[in-house]
Each structure stands twice: as C-alpha cells, then as structure tokens.
Image (cartoon, rainbow, N blue to C red; front, side):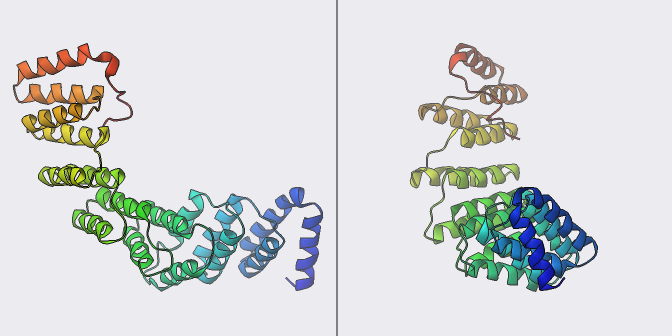
Length: 308
C-alpha cells in the first residue's frame, strides 16, 4: 500500500467516520487475511493519529494475527498506540495477547514488551500490567505471570497492593504455597501493608491445603496489624476446622466471630451442625441448630459467603 493510497483511504474515513469504520475494519481484516500485516499496522497507526478508533473486536483480531505471525514488534507497537490514545481494551484483548506468547519458549519478546510498556508514559500502566498478569494466568501460563510481576519490581510501574493480591490468588489457586508465602512476605517488606483481601486470599489457600495451624498464625497477625477479620475470614476457618474434625476450635472461632459483632451466615450454622454430628457431638449440634432457629432475622445470606 503506497502512502498516497493510504492517505486517500483515511481522508474518506474522516469524511464519514461513523459509517466508514465498518469499511475500515473490513479492510484491515482483509489485509490480515492476505498476510499484509505491515499494511494493516500502518493503516491502524494512521487512523489513531487522526483520532479514529475501531472496535475492540478489531484489536482482538489484530493481536491474534500478529501473535500467530510471531510479529511481537508490531504487536507491541499496536498495544502502545491504543493505550496512549484510548481505553478500549477489554479482558478478551489481554487473553488474546497472552495466548500469542503461549508457544514461546524464549522469554525475550515478552521481556522486551513489558520493558517498553513500562517506559511508555500511558495512564494507569500498573493497571495494564495487572490485567496482563491475570490474562497470562487464565491462559495457564503462571510462570510468565510471575515473571511479569518480578519484572515490575525493577521497572517504572511498580506492583501495587492489587498486583500482590492477584499473585496471592494465582499462586494459592495453583497450590504453590511456598511461593504464595514468599509473595505475602514481600508485601510486608515493601512500602505496602496487607489488607483484608490479602489475608483472606492467603488463609483460603492455606486451609485448602490443610495448613490450618498456619491459618491461625495469620489470623493472630491480622489482629496485631489491626486488620479486622470479616465474615469470609471466619467462614473459611470455621468450615475447615470443622471438616477436619477439630470442632472445638471451630466452635471457638464461631464464638470469637460473634464477639466481634459479626453476624453468622446460615452456612456457618449448617456447617457447624453437620460437622458436630459427624464427630458424635449431637447435643452441641442441637444447641447450634436451636440458636440458628432463634436468630433467623440476623442470619446472613448463604449465597455470598459459602466457601467452595
């Protein structure tokens, strides 16, 4: 595509931008089908210069094509152009971006992309990095998600507490408990402080792996750091201690929760009753059931606080 043809095309789009966006999208798709991705990228860059932006679907298609062609230079340029010009990139774009790197064994292109994005002065660059970390995790590339996180520590866009909480969730869900604990410790070593989301995410991961004594350690730490446990915190602990047969501790946590003024959910009651019955504590189970029936108006909804 010559510069003259490109300029004529853009001029036509400017004269009737709304209707011709459809034409422009179709033209870019055709260029990609023909393998003319350089021309597609040139056209897109020229449109952005004229403040003409296309649909998220078009950007998703472009990043997919450029990933398939392993043209990470153009992919990076398009990403930067869009981020500097507008905010149209939804979750699907980041998923497609992550998939573009899925078959890559060489980490150099991703390292280069992250470095360039960090050096580019676009708004909310840490938010963009967070979205990329989530996308790489969802596309089952946890190592690359962790690599982005580690890179951020030495770049202009430093991890924020949201970044750390995202990593805690990713690593905990994957069962990488040692790495999860290291990330949690690194929050405290930074200028940040863990919040209720940090603690709940960590405790939920620990209890799924049966590390209940560690759960209690972090519950005590919450008190020391003046982070108040909430219903989710206690629900995770009460359920896990009860399921493991440690019903006395489950009851102790249940009482502690009520002393703090946190109204139990119906799931808390049902969980306790069920687990008490399993260990033969029928009188205690009946007592909890009677308390539940007499406190119907204060009981929290099940749907928001059931532990899975």
